[in-house]
Every structure is written in C-alpha cells, then in structure tokens.
Image 1 (tube, rainbow, N blue to C red):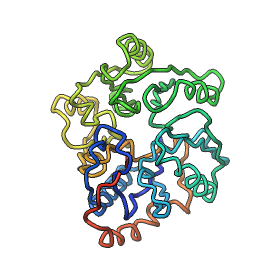
Image 2 (cartoon, rainbow, N blue to C red; image 1 turned 60 degrees about the vertical axis):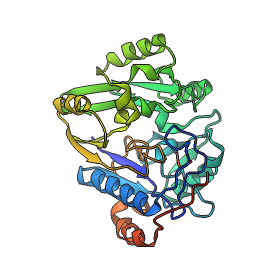
Image 3 (cartoon, rainbow, N blue to C red; image 1 turned 120 degrees about the horizontal axis):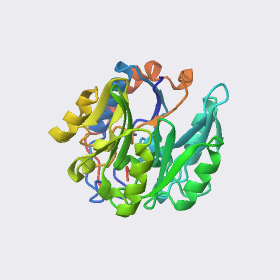
Length: 315
C-alpha cells in the first residue's frame, strides 16, 4: 500500500488568527521557528517510515496561516494518470483564501480540480475504513456536504453520516481508521458524537469492517485519534495515556512520539491534521517532491522568528 501525503509548511508570519478551536481560542503567542522545526520532523518521520510527501509552498502574501493543516484542503477524488482533487469549502472566514491558492498550486502540479458548494472541511471529515467511509458533520462541515461528497463517491460505495459536537470540530479529532498489522482498527471517543444514538450507529457501521477500540476523553483531547499510521509506524503526539499506547502497540504498531507544542499545543492540529492523504497515488508529482525541496526548507529555519504577536487561527 502506498502512503502519499500533501503537506504545506508554516509561513514565517505564522500566528494564531481566528482562534476557532479549543486549543487556539486563547490566541497564544507562537514561535514560528519551532513550528517549522516540528513540521520538518513530521515530514521526515513520514518519509523514514516509507511514505512520500508532496509540498505546497506556504503563502506570506496573502498570509495563509491555516494552509499547513492540509487535511482541510479537500480530497483526491480520483488518482491514476488524471488525478482529480475536490477542493474544500471551509467555514472559517480567514481560511477561505486557501482554496484559490491551493487550486493554482495543484493545477501547476498536474491535478484537475473541482469545487465544493456545501461548506465542507475536506479529508478531516472523512474516515476511510477498509470498504466503507464515515462522513462527519455538525460543527464545521454541514449536513449538505455529506450529500455532496456521497454523490461524488464511486457507484455503490458504502458510507455513513455521523454528527459531531464541540469541541470535536472535525472527525479526525475523535475517530481514526488504522490498517494495523493485527487487522483494521477503528478508534473512537463515544462522547464526541452529537448523541448516544449517533455513536451507536457509527460503531455498528465501523464494526462491520474493523475492530472497534473506544478511547478516553483525555486521549481524545490529546489527539490520539489524530495519529498518523505509515506502514507499521504510528506517529503520535506526546501526552497520550499508557492505556492508549498499549492498545495500539498490541495491534502491532511501533510508536513514534512527536512534540507538537506549537502546531497542536497552540494551533490545534496534530499529525493527521497536517497531512492530506493522496489515496491511490503511488508517486508524488516531481514539482512537489519533499526530497527535492527539503534542503531549501531546512535552510529557512534560522530565518524564521522565534516569537510572533498573538493576533488573531492557525487551525
């Protein structure tokens, strides 16, 4: 199975702008240099685990501070020789300029693009199980987005709509599908769903394709479900419980803990928020290849400031 991801590093002027999630709402001052270092460690970890990273360069003008949370970029609807990327239509006003910026970058790299009409925050509200899909809505993405994405799926595709509640603004904050060495897993925090009935229906649907593992509220708020599996490695944020780590290790994963003090601790996005999985794409377009761009990115670290005024989100 190929593991290809689209990522975008933080810009020099990165700061918390909108404060629209439970981590960023206090609008703390940030350290853009540390944020870039965290981002590079994640990209390096993905590549060392056998994955491939494609890079969309950051934007300083206009300043797109949320662009690096590429899970919200959209969804690679069709791979192969004619890749089609459906662009998200995000709810957060200060992030809406990301769509035309992304469109230019993706078209230049050889993708065709298509627009979303309903408010929809991309892959962050798509949980891909082995033969089925859970589409989440209710906080950022609207219920109309479920119908629109469902219409774009291949004929006969199995999908289920699940409504969430705050502070679980995307599905990838409270559920995760993992192709573990022991077999497929679905991690979920039951309390993230709008009701017990919503969770029960999602659990039954997911349980038809994967082993269900319920996690604690503390592990959900530490973004355990935002972990990223690349081969047999699971890239996780620090701060997860022993119970969580023992459960995924028993499924056959090797854990790699990464510090996301800026990107998650302040911005509100973990490993999966920072990537858009290009499912079905075996090769990254040469123009985007991280391996080619990395020396330049690493060379920028010293030029990034170590502090930035709190202004207003990164997430």
